[in-house]
Amino acid sequence: MASRAFSTPVALPSALAARMKAGLRGFDFATDLAEDIGTAGWYRGLGVMLGGIGLALALWPGIATGPTIPSQPMDATAREQWRSQTVQPLLYGGDTGQRMGPTSRLVPLAQAPERPSIDLSVMLAQEDSVEAMLGRAGVSADDVAAVRGALASAGVLDDIAPGTRFALHLGRAAAPDRPRLLESLSLRARFDLDLTLTRSAGGFAVVRHVLPVDSTPLRIRGVAGASVYRAARAAGAPMKAIQQFLAAIDAHLSLDEVHQGDVFDMVVDYKRAPDGQVEVGELQYASIESHGRMAKQLLRWGKGRDAQFYNASDMVEQRATQALVMPVAGARISSGFGLRLHPILGFARMHSGTDLAAPWGAPVYAVADALVNFVGPHGGHGNYIRLDHGGAVSTGYGHLSRFAVSPGMRVRAGQVIGYVGSTGLSTGAHLHYEVFRGGAAVDPMSVGFTVRAGVDRAELAAFRARLAAVLHVKPSEALGPMGAYMAMGSVPRAAY
View 1 (tube, helix red, strand yellow):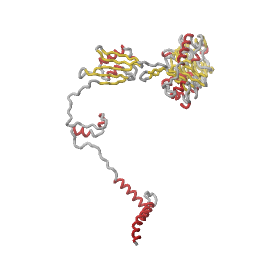
View 2 (cartoon, helix red, strand yellow):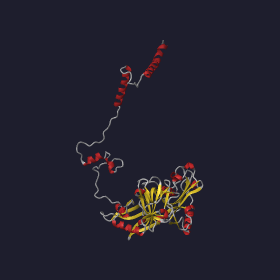
View 3 (cartoon, helix red, strand yellow):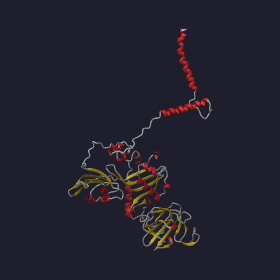
View 4 (cartoon, helix red, strand yellow):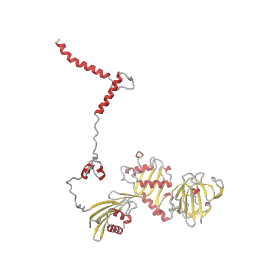
């Protein structure tokens, strides 16, 4: 009996817990209120939902209001205290958004002490002048004139490029209402020259610091992948050099003819300063090798604006001769000079040139040395180029798809000036070729030009020497882990 009385209190909690667990297991806390509407289970689910909403609202945190403008007018001190607790101080340069208002402990100064000196860094912008830039920086007109004279006497005033930074050290002003005195100025006047101007009794003393610059050209050689541009970028070629390389190759060899696995080679003027700055110059050499042989080898030749890329294989000795030169290689005559029935207009009129049938995009060459007089749209001729060869002789090239020259350029015989197209009044891709003598059109097939396929002996020797010097440059090994591959003349395909 004692045993039963002792065991019952222990067994009841266990049984109750089992029944409660079974009841909770069968209780549906997420009742679908779209089903069994009106039943006890539906009302139970509605009650659970409303209870949950009420509990959420009861526990919802309060929303404290921020500082507001009191309804009563505030004096200056109270307004400053209120403003210091808003985001408005950020407009006044506050670092944290907190700018405390002045209190009664604040004692205003009758006069603020002047800083003994100010150091500024200003930059010469595009279409700006040194004088205007210094004036905006607070330099007096007398100091600006003195600085200009010092830079001019140093011979660097015209060499200062936009983007050059000037470090200014301004001292105390001679009077409270006068600009500060310029004590010193320093700048990178040229890539190879640092200048420092220091105030002296007679103006500004100029100290020149010539930098030792490495002017060894940069040579990039690698294997073209799916894109020559991406391959050159991966090899470390500067953007400016790649743009010039693609333009030079495209003017003599269509980029569509450059395939994966071809070897590209470029040499560009490159300067390196001791502080790590570099200056990319003009492209001097460009070549494409396909299947182990040279597909195109170009060298920049000439001085100043007359410098152009010439194919090394075309530079052969040949005397000047009178010859009939065709501006498109391998073209056939599709329409001659004279009166004809216009294929589009449908009536007879004078055909002032000769039509040469050629594929779209074929290069068009200058028939002789000339000055480019006109480049642009020209009525029914479409895209048109006019060359002046001197001696009252000129030539015209019409229906072009695009241009390779601009007005004012000087071109040499055999230089690419444009590409065959079908612009203007044209029924298909061809070149409309005209020759004018004394302003009157003549039959192009009756005019011979004095041409040279190459250069004289002295110029040819200089060209060959220049080509050998360019090819003597070793591929750069300072462009990262790919330098060793480029030095060997190849780059792993996986890199591209």
